[in-house]
Length: 513
Ligand SMILES: Nc1ncnc2c1ncn2[C@@H]1O[C@H](COP(=O)(O)OP(=O)(O)OP(=O)(O)O)[C@@H](O)[C@H]1O
Ligand SMILES: [Mg+2]
Image (tube, rainbow, N blue to C red):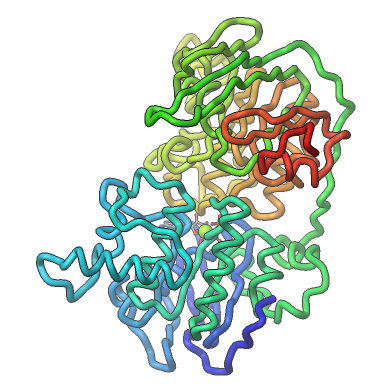
């Protein structure tokens, strides 16, 4: 828990807030109070209404009913500029930076009161000073699309600080960060609190809630169902129960380990960096069998992403070979690889996973239109498609008013469930899953892990990239550790020890452990 004690002065009061969307009551008469110096953890299942409630504080949505008071005064927040003027700033679940502009340009974008030609040199100097003060490494001249997600996150934070936000809203800020980056973010938030700022923090990670917040508020299906001091929570299970209304097992059923033939094999893959220097992939070899889950451990950014892109045809390798079911698929196109039976749950779901303007139903069925399941003599059977989509919506508990709703209107976690459902369902032998439980609530996380195990039990081969050792130890049969583009070691999960994995992840050679 935070050492800093919040004051009794409310900085934000939301009273009786109600917000409807077509077919959904997203917020139902919600009250929320944030005090000066307080961290309030806002929790709830995917689709519970957390982001919606916060978007009303920053003027992206208008409540249908209810009032918002900021520093005791009734506030009319009609735009992000209005909320900024009140000292409120938000880091969104989906980043909102402009990719082809520099860091400095992004930070001042949309700020009121700047001269027509902003004094960039001075602005950059201020940004650098501010970033030093908070220990945030940010380079004002870098172009945003060259930054890693961790760096982009720092720019988002700096943007808030630069604009003088006193009330910070952080919507799953650590979902895309590595454990190390998440710890850094923690430290920054502590510094901001020490200056009297306040924060509302949305997360699905229960340990962060316990470490970070003073108060916990839980939403369920749009209603506020519980508010309590974090210190009064004795067990993480109790928190999970408050959110989903049932116990979460935190343990999974799995069948015996019966590996079959090799389904996916990498032989000495090498990917050179265009800029020169260290290789992106350095002599990577592994084999993955039917009925087996190979977990890839490693701190994000050590080549896991590039490896999956090489396996799925999204990036070319410079040398080495990829075999799928015994056939050479090195540097083949993504389509050829999909046709060979590979399903892919990508890390970057915003850009690669779904078509936002298409309906949930079409997104779920788009990989299967041409199969016998959904068409007859190449004529798509709409009725079959509807039944199929409804079945997946139910099986994966996707919260949506109907299968006709556009995917872009779903909550972050439910967009993710849509991709998972489509890819897991269409798996033709090999499933490549990258951070599958990112952004999912505890209940959905459990369901996804169980589903991955079910794929393996039914004879599919699963390549699972995860940052959470706990998840890998729970789900995988074998674990490979990646560091700087290399596989440091591959071991059976029964021989894997957390400390050893941690050392390998940090680049310590096996012989030195
Ligand atoms: N612009 C919109 N149009 C229609 N429906 C919407 C819109 N924004 C949100 N919703 C719906 O409102 C409900 C609450 O969504 P919200 O994004 O607030 O959930 P959340 O608690 O943030 O979930 P997650 O943990 O998955 O991010 C969902 O059913 C969602 O589909
Ligand atoms: Mg959300």
